[in-house]
Amino acid sequence: MNDLPVTRQTFDEVMVPVFSPAAFVPDRGLGSRVWDTQGRDYIDFAGGIAVTALGHAHPDLLQVLHEQGGKLWHIGNGYTNEPVLRLARRLEELTFADRAFFANSGAEANEAALKLARRVAFERHGADKVEIVSFTQSFHGRTFFTVSVGGQPKYSEGFGPVPAGLRHLPYNDIEAARAAIGAQTCAVIVEPIQGEGGVIPADPAFLKALREACDAHGALLIFDEVQTGVGRSGYFYAYQDTGVTPDILTTAKALGNGFPIGAMLTTHALAAHFQVGVHGTTYGGNPLGSAIAEKVVELVSDPKLLEGVRSRSEVLKGHLAKLDERFGLFKEIRGKGLLIGAELNDAFKGRAKDFVTAAGQHGVIMLMAGPDVLRFVPSLVMPLDDMSEGFARLTQAVEQIAGSKARTEAASH
Image (cartoon, rainbow, N blue to C red; front, side, top):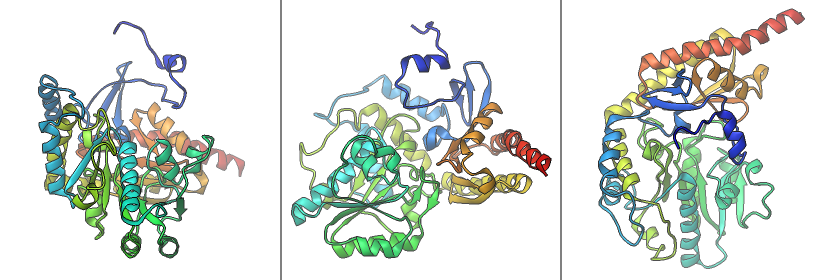
């Protein structure tokens, strides 16, 4: 079967067309570099969408994969297993939480969090307290419930009636939040840094106001840390640098460094509302994924690694500043740790995709966060030489677009 010839064109012939992948097909990776099926190498600034936080083919993770893979992959939820129990214990030691539920993705973790919030409100306050507050431009997953809760209508329209009781407010607007959160609110879900929405950090005062409003009205505060968690912000979870503690936290992406696993973390008192049979999953918390995630958590929670994230953040911003100085690209460079967004200025508005495509042509794997923002979410342990090489290649890609634009403008004058 491995001899069956496939190319990028095969995608168009065999796959449901919900994605539009790049022209090249990645084949293998090591650290912060990826090679395609033609043997060409790329510097990886995308990290599999903030997933491969320890880079590709990390030796410690490979060892765990082989060891656990030779013991037990899957057993089902009628049994527990040692890796998942150790993972839960480790996450709880690192956070406010004392109970964990494991799933396969961020969407499933958020689904569990939202269902738990509705269940808690139902059992504590009755059937009318169902309203879920989220924020415009937020992203919480692609299940029908989570995509409806998310604040980007383009993802939820065209599928019929959305679930009732959902309300979307402007992000970072304290007065709007205070006015909207009330007796009917069962939960507020928020990203400490909006990722897909443009890499927009929350104002700490905004998060504090959400906490106060939830406390005042008996609502639960959910932090979606699917993208910001597991070291991405320079802290193990981003909430730990905000002065605000949520009631429920969701995590995925980097938790398995590419092996699918997500988790919902919460308190003993709230978890008690999820009794046997109320919620579940077949694959969630399987021993293979849990063993890998346990090693990821052990490595990423090391204070030296987290300090390295914060120092790399400054280096990356410095490279972006030089790029901006040369080409005049950006309206704003923002974010935290190694979740950085560079918003294109009006001269390049709507052209993020063009830059991502050109970067690929010059040997850089890039991401966008909406049509106007270039997103950088590399490995948390990216070698600085690789970062420099990546920006040297990216400079050529930018010159291909910005240089031609500058020449066109000069010719028109």
